[in-house]
Every structure is written in C-alpha cells, then in structure tokens.
Length: 226
Length: 214
Image (cartoon, rainbow over all chains, first blue to last red; front, side, top):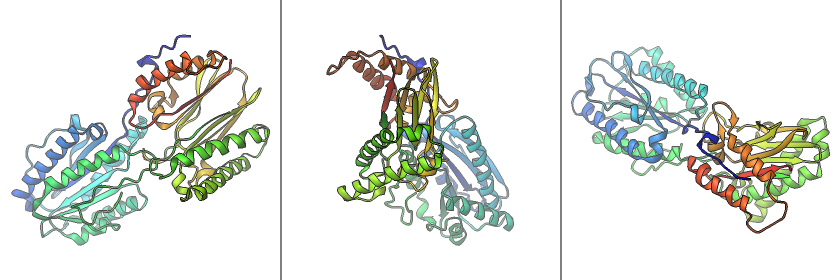
C-alpha cells in the first residue's frame, strides 16, 4: 500500500506566542536623551527579535505610554507588523497606575484572542519603565499594583520594573515586584537591556512543558529565574 | 497494548522516568484490563494507575540515585483485547482512533494556561488529571498516540481534530505484512514521512505510536 502524505494531510499550528507589553513613561521629564535612547532601544529590540529564528515567530509586542493620560500606541502585533518608532514627544505628568491598568486590559483582550483561535502562549511579560514618581490617581495606582502582584503570585505574569536614572521612584516600582527588586537603569543603558530582553524572549519561545526558563542574568543583578 | 511517554525537558533523568512508566503502565493495564474495561469505579482506577506509576518511579529514583521529580514524564496508553479497549492519558500529547473510517480524538493535550505547562506523572494533580476512556472495539480500526512535538503537525489546536495523515498512518500499519523482517518497506516509508513532513513543524522531539487491527 502506498503512503502518500502531503501538506494537505497535515495541520499548520501557529507558534505559541510570547506576549510582551512595554509600558513606558513619556512624561515631560523624559525629554531629551532619555526618550531618544528609549526609542533606539525599542527599535533595536524589534531588530533583534526579527533576526532571531525562534523569537521572530513567537514574540508579540504591545506598547502603552503614560504621561497625563494612558494611551495604547501599539496593540499586540508580531514583529513583521510592528512599525518602527520614529519619535515620541514627552510631555505632562506620570500616570503610571493608569498606564499599567491599560497594559493589563490590553493583555487580557489579547489572551482572549489567543484562546478563541487555539493559539498557545507563554507567560506574558510586562516591562514597566519610568524615570519619576507616579502622580496620577492614587486609586488607579493601588489597583494596578494589586492586579500585577496578584498575577505575579499566581505565576500568570512576569514583571520587569525598570527605573530610569536617579529620580525614579524605586519604592513604588518595588511594590509591583515583590519577588525581586526593580532594576535601575544607570547611564541610560537601554541598548543593553533590550538586547537582553530579545535574547530572553528567544529562550522562552524555545521552552517545552516542564522547563523552568532560566534567564541569562549576568549584568542584570537582582533578576531571578522566571 | 501500546504505551508512549515523553520525558520532561526540565527533568534531569526523564529518560529513566519515561522508560519506567512505559514498563509499569503496560504491565498494569495488561494485568487489570478486565477490571478497568468493565469496572464501575473510575476514581479507584485513576488512583491505582497513578499510584502504580509513581511507586515504580520511586523504585527507579532509588536505583538511579535521583529525586522522583527528576523522572517527570507524560503517559499515554491504549490497551485492547478482542472486543474492548481502555485509554489512559496524563499530560500533553494526543490519543486518537479511527472508528467507521473516521479519525477521532480520544484524549486531547492537557495544557494549562501556558504553552510550557502540563501535568506529569510526578505532578501532585496526576490522579485527578488522568483521563480514562473505554469502549467497544467494534468498527474501531486503530489507535494513534503522539507526543506534543508530533502533535504540532498532526493535531489542530483550533479545531481540536487530528490531521488526515493520522488515518493514513494507521491504515499503512494495518496493512503491513505479518511476516517479520528486519527493516520492512512500510517502516521505511513511515519513517520518511515523519522525518520529512512531521518533524519540520516543531523544534521539539517527535514520538508516534500506532496500534492497528487487520
């Protein structure tokens, strides 16, 4: 008996996704080198993901900016659909809680899309970057902290709180991440951080059931395993 | 009797664990086939199966010199007699069967919310997540068991259905010559399909077991 099996006889399953939410401070204090370095870092992250065989198919990135309001400037998209960022004009206050809540709402919607279409996904990541102190609604900030810490405790979210420069409120950032201290990005080392992030996405996208993904933590003191 | 186990990538001695649950699982399902295929108490059957597998893993852990958790693996099994079958499944991977010429899913992957999470025989939830099915072999022409790697090409996550290639693989095994030879032609053809068409869809390893009636 002949065994003729063609492409039609097989199924094409989508690659399990790694949703990455970048929640970034674009308040007035980010003006100048900080925002330029941040934009360069995000674009470098896109390039690095694009060049990596595993991360290319798996990563989906969204960006929420917060200043005197919170705005979704990039909904979840695979690397081929992500527009490189040309410029961001920082202005206004630091509505950090509102930004995180919008990022979490966007993530929940994306997870529903995955579930509805049979796409598997890995534990989502939230990268929270700010250079100052939150001054939006205190209730929104508390709600954001509670949502994040509950998700982290249930192992449903990995959060990377990053303080930019010496004025970042590390105490507030620490409340988002009870398991490990936030990282203060010294000397605007965005490039190094986003390179590390793209490599880490690649490692997660290669993991199989039972794997505990250990990230390459050298140079990122304070990070623990996922 | 057909059994397949896929060792957890994270477990340091998973190859011993997979071998252990295959050996112990086959022996148990053969010994107690009548009880499992006709008995009323499914909870009891679940408990017996997981306890037997974990007990065998404890012996292996002692012999190899590791922890039981270092032996984590999935467990997929089909036992068939003249007219009845029993299916048992812990973890991911898929068990399918052909009935009246139609490919059906007996047991789908047990993935938690995230892609790199599933239940293993060594998990605390193994007994409660063990799926047990049984039925008549009438009009059933074969079974296919596969690891999660193979299911990337053969199982549609969205539709929860098995690919037509599964029925073809079962039929080729059903029509294989009874005479034993060292490397029969059908086996080479199956291997070629696996290597060239099933494997490329995943970076994970692929295992497939087929049980077919003539």
